[in-house]
Every structure is written in structure tokens, then in C-alpha cells.
Amino acid sequence: MKLEEGLKNIGLKGSEIKVYLYLLENGVSTPPQIAKGTRIARTNTYHILRGLSEKGLIERQEKALFTHLPTRPPFFALLSAEKKQLNSYSLIFKRFIKLRPTNR
Image (cartoon, one colour):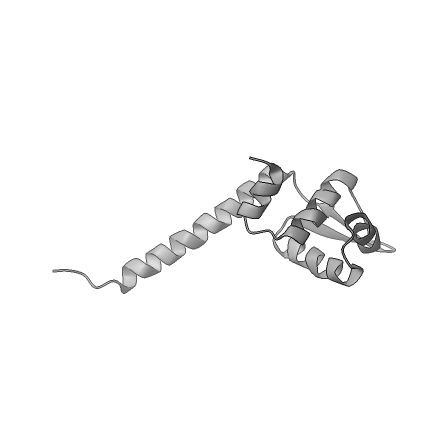
């Protein structure tokens, strides 16, 4: 499986994948650098970066300019996202079992 496919399978959208891969290839970058390198509008880049940060895939460093970098290699990011998804499914399943009437 290609990295792009794996990232898509864990719920990342096309622009999120572009930004994440850009950061993996280029390291610490500012939003304007990311926007230029990915050809995504700068204003959209800020929203994408916030979403990736909330998902734990990147971290924001506050220096003179705000910069962003990947927090972990993609393998660990994929595993972490898969674990969260499995935990969500487990919670849904447990709630479903509680709601289901028992046949006695």
C-alpha cells in the first residue's frame, strides 16, 4: 500500500495528505512555505495545519514565525490513527450491545 493510500484510509483528505507529505519531505516549515510548496491557498493551509495538529500528526512550534513539523514517522501516525478508529468502533459496539434487547 502506498503512503498516500494509507493516509487516505485513516481519513485524511487530499489537501491534508499534500501538506503532511510536504512536511515529511521538507521538515520544519512555515504556513506560507507550505502553501507555496503545495500550491494550496495560504488561508486554507492554516485550516489544514490545525486539523493535522488536532489529529496528532504534526506539531506547531511557536518561534518568530509559526512553524510546523511532523511529530512522528508516518508509520506511527497510521498506527495511532488506526488505534483511535478501532477504539471508536469498540465503543459503538459496546453501546449497541447495551441498547439491544435481550432474548430470554
